[in-house]
Length: 401
Ligand SMILES: O=C(O)[C@@H](CO)OP(=O)(O)O
Image (cartoon, rainbow, N blue to C red; front, side, top):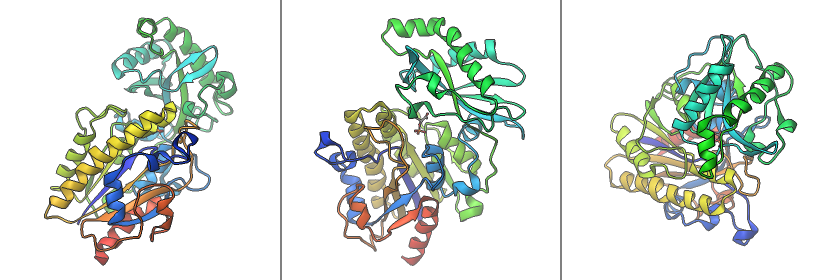
């Protein structure tokens, strides 16, 4: 038996008046997720346990079989692992967004989804001016970068994810508490450096949002993980375009597979991710595929883009995997789910349970559920489960077959 988890980041949503009270999943054309639901088992997964922020770090950690209560120490240390940045015992890693500020407002958490190449120059310019022995900036992917602070600086500061406060005033959401004076000054001092940079002058001349400020959040110390193979006895791989999920894979001892054209955005290489996933199972037991696109559309509040991202995920990721699995001589157990909701109306994450389907190519157990969406899955026989138990549940179902 081979095991596959397909994650449409942020896919779940809320009923929308614009859709006549339906959710994005109910409106979108998702024949492959519906097919799996008709021929599989359904339920709801709690990927964000009580008391945790509804971030993709907590949610994807759960889905990959790790209980946040045992393993979560913040988002940025996971991203540091993917970026190849070693963390000492007293080093605190911060996520460092390039954001767009306009008239003191946080206008765009992603600086217009700035390219990694442009961002690298901006982050290097900031590091040249503001970096030091104790504070080092590292360029990452698009608007997602890192700051490493030594001697525990800011470890317990109260920092706000910028995508939670889009169109809010910067001054209302600056870091507070431990070390926040240093963190706030870094943000403030970054602005003149970035505003004067030719990259941003060019972006503005092209009508694109500039990356004219840093924003620091998601900090933590390096976690310690048991490997996926130690926990579940399975070898495996992870496929994602974002450092967070690749970093989770590295800590879990999974192989990180880089897929050409995987962008972490609406234009990612959906089919490529699915094809690389199926190929990885020739000599591995498990693969998790993470697609960021629906989440980015949710943060943009762009309904058309989110519908398209969900349909692209269904057709090109789920459909490609489902066809290959059905044509193979091997048996597969496949789970498809969002990590968390990113409702269009809110433009950020919520923590309610998400719909999931558990499909086996044996098609030996079927629920009376016809469509993959937030309401239908409430009738699934698997009920409400902890996301971090899903891998175990997949294996138990396979043994019963
Ligand atoms: O990478 C990020 O900064 C966030 C917001 O876009 O992504 P996610 O919601 O997947 O954590």
